[in-house]
Image (cartoon, rainbow, N blue to C red):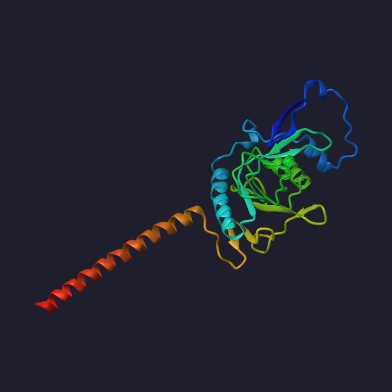
Length: 256
């Protein structure tokens, strides 16, 4: 077997052809453990990794909104997007990797090249996958089992096209050591107890709302607010200049 070190921890990266020929017993594994043992790695070359415009636009809007909101309100959470999660496959020393479209974990917010469970990182608490035609079966079935076995507590899935999954926003929650369907409210929203936020599908977009009904701003919202703030500051400066001019004219008139 081929090994490598990550952060000082030696792990098995690949099983050699000779080792693949050895018989392996899986009878003691649960179905979730067996899937985690056999699921293919998320790699850049994998066909299901490629995103179309709807999927890319959905995650590109969702991730910054979630990141900046939690950084301001819940700094104990680490928020990442498309970052490989390294894990040890059951009954082996082989390391696999999965790359969620977004995830949140109780961990220090620092730059990472991967999120390494083999090095003792806490398992992700919340995971989001944006389904595509190539990933929908993998996301709904295989990754559901894999994320459960990794310790994920809330797993949300969104279909920005509305053609691949019904309902377009759905998920699973951990209850009594099993995943159960994440029941939406009457408006189709998912309430995240972990994030203390509502997840809301609005057409092709996945939006976030605070529990008090306040929308979490998207990057576009923040940019627009920045433009509006600059415009307001410019108007204030123009008014202040006008006041100075009027006072000067008034003083000049008084002197005359």
